Length: 387
Length: 65
Image (cartoon, rainbow over all chains, first blue to last red; front, side, top):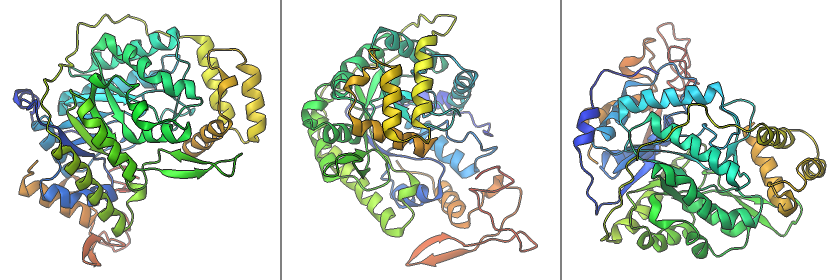
């Protein structure tokens, strides 16, 4: 990527955020359909911040001047958010690609000065660093330590608040119920914050028959600095033909239930700063889908602006970091992650994959015995899609 | 947030023409077309000799695609 020599960092630091303002924005990446959908909103000055996935331009030698200028404009107002996709927070070894990812983040952040930087909860399937999908992990002391180690490395690469997004996918209801408290512990050493993705909550609530509002309260809402809103899709269940699985595919309009959940959640998040509408360009090819996207944005914004925030805002500034010289790793966990990836990306029938997983991971912290068969098939579908 | 007129213009032109604007060294010329009142990039472009059919997403000069 070529960056230009405009100096904006100092300016960005001087711009203060109004504690009572919640900024509403979009996920803005370098894609024609997505940016065309956003263009009328940019022209009308409706978009108050943008979130850029800074690690998705890995095979681009150059980015257009106008896109760099767009990022710089939001950065100069301290309204540019960095959102990573490929770091794989819970991968049990430390890779050259992760080292490169951190260096890239540091370089990009030095130029664009993100307001904050975030990544996803989970580990990525895929042999290639840039192909794969995030899956859940055992929630134990080892993964807590690895996650904290990786978060501190991200934090040390930037001089701004860092956070994590809750995961849409879960193999079992135990993972759904425990993710919130685990995230709270995970974020503590970096004074980190949570992106609460409401469509991810919607997926988990539907797939595991939980009340979404109750599920919201299982997360540390005082740590929510950002909310994501998006759409998704329904997948016919593989075993139970009466059942549908909700997938976080980001390729359709925002469901009414998610908008309602936004209105419900806002008063419970005293430290909220940004609300971001996400959609993948694959769902924005037609003129009508672009119009729907803008309608979704206005619906999200009207709900946020109807809510008056009155409480004080917590600081998520980085503390002094006690970073270990050598990144934490664990061979046994890595072999398990690789085995799961190989199985899910294989061409074997799902029953054979299930048998292999239940045999190899029997009575481990993966707790395969509690995995929902339909969610195993969903993981298989996700891994096949992104391998 | 209010963006400058020059940025909005560059953004609209870049998206509509399908070029990398000033950063593109390949001098692509892709026609703007109107479809149901909306401006979109052209179906194809030409590069002096009229043979090139790329836009900024898969421009060989930029390495995209």
